[in-house]
Length: 330
Image 1 (tube, helix red, strand yellow):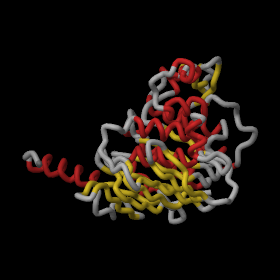
Image 2: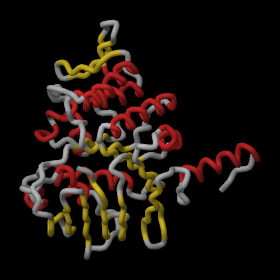
Image 3: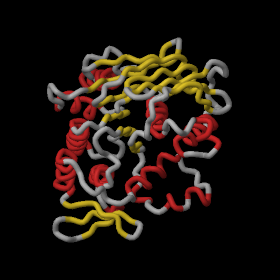
Image 4: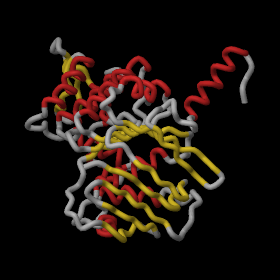
């Protein structure tokens, strides 16, 4: 099941925006404050919904997917947005959810086709595996963390999947080769068991290996599998540039195994590597969010370089001009 499109009206920075998605890889670019992370979290909350649990019930019961959105709403009071006619519509190939925003989210329409929760993972830009253990105290002590930061710990700390498909096992083997071992979860902490037999605490690993190790655990626990959704906020965060092509190979490998991928990025290398390393059979769309006098608009293109509104390229052009001329470009 793939998410096909979204319409957002009068929510945070969005006045009225429509985006059609690829069922392969979707890359969001844009300046700070254009809503890239907002989009990822809205899509994640949709993935956490199901036919039997309405948004209103989820909010009242503090169910995670909907608690995310109510927290989102409460934390956005400093933002200016309309108080009337707020609506979010998310369409997949099996279900449509339409949310009406008031002081809380109220579901006003959904299809009658039964739907289990869509298997999904939201990877925040912050490394969380080195903080393993705080998820146990999150509810009891009301720790001030975004719930997505806690959720990734719950999803990586689960039991191993009984069986992986050949395609997903191939991705797992590739990661194991890159990190020279395998990731294990032992007594509440993560370790990389090197092929030499030496265990290395996750906190001591290089940031690039942490990124790959996180994906390793998500695959091994069955959280990332065929027909699931991966939402990854800034994969390049705290990453050595030399690791970017390796991360892209993993992303392409997941997409080729029927994982729908949504990524936000500010990084030229990440976006460009996705473009040049994909094959003719790979599916991808690049979505540029940009500010206008009427709010945030979006441009979508199958080519990263084909985007007319491309802040990554315009910033790179300014850098090159300054490097060549020696004059600061405003």
